[in-house]
Amino acid sequence: MKFNRLKTKSGVDINGPLLISPEIISDSRGFFYESWNKRNFDELIGEEITFVQDNHSKSQKGILRGLHYQIPNIAQSKLVRCTIGTVFDVAVDIRKSSPTFKEYVSVLLDDKNKAMFWIPEGFAHGFLALSEFAEVQYKTTDYWSKKHERIINWRDPSIDINWPNLTDSNSNFFLSERDLNAPLLKDLNLEEDFFL
Image 1: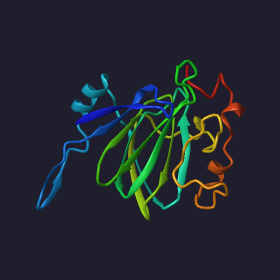
Image 2: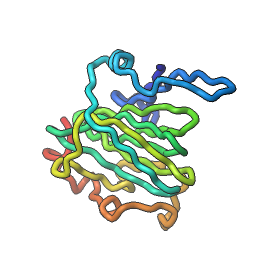
Image 3: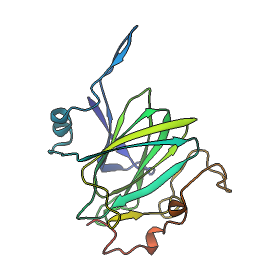
């Protein structure tokens, strides 16, 4: 298992999210790899993590989900992978004391690279399906809580995510009603809706 530290759009190193690549053994029969090894993962990120929930979504091309997160005391860290197809995956820093507050990192996850995206607490998460279909699976460190869930608008100009294939009309993207009408960062409560 190898990892890459990530840089924001402006080229700054970001503390927290990691792109993790498994060691894949391939031959004429197919492939094998460890998709999850707790001991190796804990050693890699330098702390003991307990996952309590696995989620699995299927999206058609152009489906955009996000930007979602949960506030303390039911905040979630996520370990995300794409098992079918390709997604453009994003993590936005919402730690108000962070030097990279409101900046984001993005990665391509697909069924070929089999990489995993570690998104710790303090980051909003979203992804865009780029292939005809994409299936995303992710582990979370806490349970989903409607009361604690927050959403940031995917087109927030203060974040300015460079979504692939974006047009002015947005007609090539499909979002849920709540994601489409999510508030901008400036409309959220800095004391209640963000991390320290």
